[in-house]
Length: 160
Ligand SMILES: [Zn+2]
Ligand SMILES: [Zn+2]
Image (cartoon, rainbow, N blue to C red; front, side, top):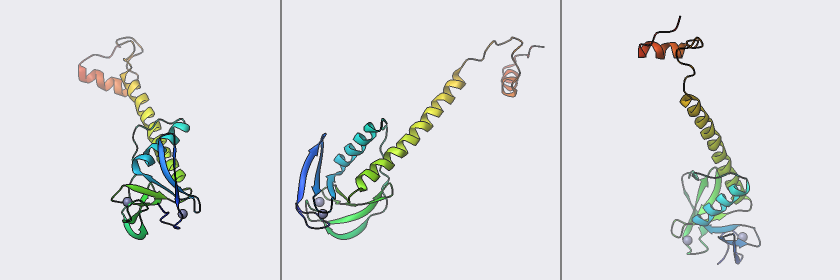
C-alpha cells in the first residue's frame, strides 16, 4: 500500500485499537473512518472530556487525482470541522496530512466541550426551576413579579 501523496510505502500500525497506515516520508496517515472516530474519542478521553456526540461536520466533496492506497479509486477532498482531508468514497478510508488528525481531533473535542458546558448550564437552570417555591403563604412570598403572576393565575391571594 503506497502513500497517495508521495508514493512511499505505507507502514501499517495499530495502537490502542486504532489501525492506521502511516507514511514515513511525508507523515501522512491513512485510516478507516471508524478508526478516525476512535482516535478522536481517545484524544477526548486524554483531555478529560467525555464525548456524548461526535459529528465531524462534513463539507462538500471535490474530486482529486490522488489514488486511494487501498483500492486505487480517486480520493475526494472534503473538510471535516474545517480541516481538509482526502477520503475514499468506496472503502471509507480517510487520508490526513501531518498534523491534520490532531487538528481535527482538537476541533471536534473543543466543539463537544462547548456543547457540554452549555448542557451543564441548561441542567443547572432546570434544577433552579424545579426547586419548590419556599414558604408559600408566608410573608416572604410575593416579592417577585413572576410569583405574583403565578399566584394571580392560580387564584391564590397574596398575603397582606
Ligand atoms: Zn507520503
Ligand atoms: Zn479506497
